Each structure stands twice: as C-alpha cells, then as structure tokens.
Amino acid sequence: MAQQLAPIILVEDDEDDVEFVRRALKTRRVLNPVLVIPDVESAKAYFRRAIRTGELPVVTIIDIYLPAGQTGLDLLTWMREQPQLAESAAIILSVSTDRTHEARARGSNAALVLHKPITPGLLVDAIGGLNVAMTYTSIEGRSGIAIEGRSQ
Image (tube, rainbow, N blue to C red; front, side, top):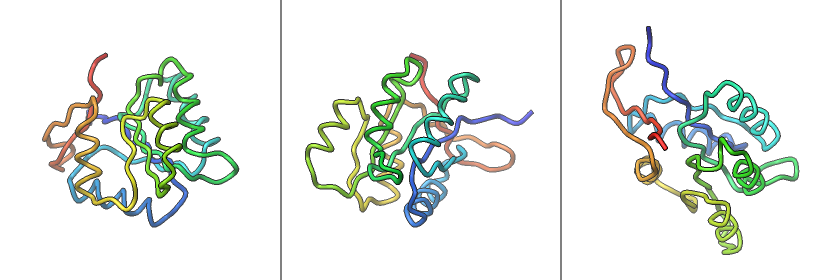
C-alpha cells in the first residue's frame, strides 16, 4: 500500500506563480502533492470537505491577492474561525508593501508572510521552519522530502 502524504495547498490564481511554487518544491525534492485552488470560495469548499474527512493539508500557501473580490487574508481569517484549521500552518505570499496587510496576516496567525519575489530555497526553508516534520524518504520509487504535520 502506498504511503499517502498530506497535500500542500496553494491558493493562487496566477499561473506563473503556480509554476514557480511547483518547480521550487520539485527542485527541493518535496514529495507531497500540491493542490492548486484558484480562489477563496473554492478554497473554502475544499476545506469544508477536508474537515469532514479529516484529510487536512500539511501547509497552506495563500496569495494575498485573489479574484472575485476576496483576498487571501479573507480566507486566512475564515480558516482561523474553523476549530480544525485554527492552528494549521499557513503562509501568506504578497507583493504588497502595505504594512497593514502584514499586520492583518499576523493578527490572523499566519505562520509567515513572504514578500515576492522569493527564491525556491526560501520557500522550502520557510515551510521547514513551521511546526512540521521533514523526513528524507522514498515513496513509490521516488526519494525526497516528506512533509508531515506534528501532533498537537
């Protein structure tokens, strides 16, 4: 039976940024699947299902600017209102230099706020600095880093 790793959720609507994150994780040999969600409402729907099934992501990376009138900060605030997501690892990606955005992210318990542009190494190192376990392993013939949540 194949080992199932929890996904890394990327809430991002820009294809270039999606490809950057995928490439960064692949370059650093992260084995967790990456699930891309393009907007806040779709992310909420995903999280509602994940809460019901208990299959929560290991980390959520959220772009601050998203389509349809809601921001990544709106999503993060909603996540913190859900008991099962209140302490989940979340990283905000931002091009904004507006300090009120960063303050709001920190007020919503974002683990990190990373300002674009970032390097692949910075992204993976940032994930490794969260409350997660990073283990070098082999899964289905691929060797690399498996990221798993730590027990609360």
